[in-house]
Length: 323
Image (cartoon, rainbow, N blue to C red; front, side, top):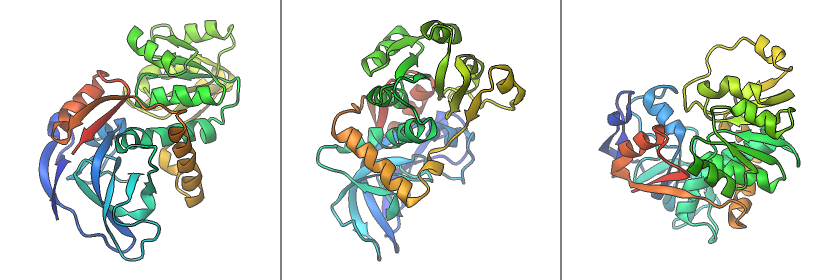
């Protein structure tokens, strides 16, 4: 079956993305074919395109989408033609009108959650779930610093942390973005220029229990300096580039700190973890504790423009591609 897709044959800037026609096979055993209605855009898509995370070429980027099941392969149980579903997958391929993939990545959507809401939130909200609940193990009253707080993940982090009773300090580059983070539940919002000093001032000199950082290289030192003694830095993204080689002595010098570089798929690898994590995300979305802000929608053919804006930090909230 021939369908439209976005593909890159060499790594580079947004200009390497082009619209092509690709063949989507009929679903084999354990697989389904999904017709996409909305495709989520994430920073990891730019890492694949630029070569930060190597992939096989040519590559269709994209890790998540929502849509309707069009065909079901042999042995698939729990899903049927016509079901509304959302998914994230461990390999790229969602920047297309259709996709055939293993059924175990799919989750049925309840009526309360629209396709656009699901595609805008699914990978990001699942990331937030594991960062807050299982990586940081945030407790009520903990002070948590969130960088890139007005982005898709950042706004969801502010809401989730507020729901579990944390004191959230949002870091964002402009006053408008800081206002968005406050509206999403952050108790304070600051800029990057004096990040560590401002966090210390807000905590009476103590420092934060946790810093959840999606920026990477540009904020690494400030993130460490924002932590209390024995605090935890979770570095989960590379928006400004990889942190690079680290002298572990710096962790001792700054207060016996902890740090980790987690990935979603290590926290969702086991079926029980996948089921529990995605069920929690569905509840948070369905009952309104997560209010998904869709910043902008692009036609699928304009994926390059979408990537350019994302990397220029010209977006806020979640971005969607519409087939």
